[in-house]
Length: 436
Image 1 (tube, rainbow, N blue to C red):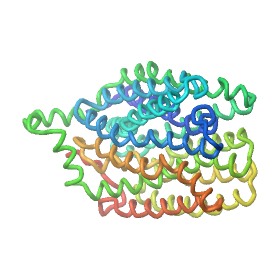
Image 2 (image 1 turned 30 degrees about the vertical axis):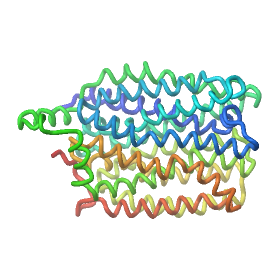
Image 3 (image 1 turned 120 degrees about the vertical axis):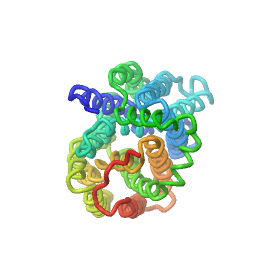
Image 4 (image 1 turned 180 degrees about the horizontal axis):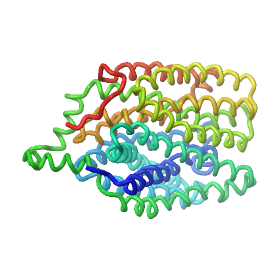
């Protein structure tokens, strides 16, 4: 089926803008974790309050595999478009709750409980967002440019992190601590309520994925629709594609650790552990995520031309080496300049395994289980290694007394990611989309 340039632009906009709005809502909780910890999780010490807030941040990730499976199966059954419209409405509900919740001082224990509920709704929604938006994007894209178009999914995440960091910078730089605690932190969450109507309108204007429509037509012609089941589709992933599941899970590990250590944990670490001004930290994070935004399409394009593995392997190795030395330099000489250097160069190398990830996670699975397969591997990887990374590394620094502890966590993820890249199926470095 031919896709018009106009419809392709709409699909890119629906995937990128909608996904960026969702991830903006998800990111700002981590960026304002220090403020939220004081207002919703008062404890005997600031450190204990922060751990409770970061645990709540991690709770959202516990719902992501469930949301990924349910919304992934829904997308594989009724279509990518309907599933994406549902995820964006759920995210608006969760974010809107956070923006209007009274604090612990106002309503007591109900405040942190409602905050946890809002995070659970956010996590469920985000669980289906990545795979649904990515699947739609690559199924509309020309076969020889799917890596390039798929990379826009990671651009949308980088855009969300960048906008979140910019919002945090502007608020922390121009508001007093009292104003920030009283009302300033709520502004990004209230803005995030726009994710519902704006995202829904954008996604309502795109057609259903042509590859998915062809898949449904083929099922109907073969009269398999009546005998197929959700259970068989789910089980077939683990029975028929174990190597694909393991390889993509490992690739997700290195990507998610890079995001949740260098985008979410680094600002907390720089402020609390090294005493840097929070405005400087947020500005460096903004610049680093802007580098990701610009470089991910280049990495996706290179993966189309030279193959996924040819981009993954050197990118991960360079990221591991640069990450270690730049993080050590920052710890030894904490300053805005050393943090900015670390964020920019590490983000540059991150882009070379961020960019090809969306296409890799989807093209290894056939159409009928594509959204579900990508949901499971992505969300399990994020749950185990990403969502709890800020909490785990905050505790690890405190327990070991070493400011270098987080980088060893990163090194482990690099090894896992390299194993995943080597396990990618196919003798050739370039993977071909599977349609049956």
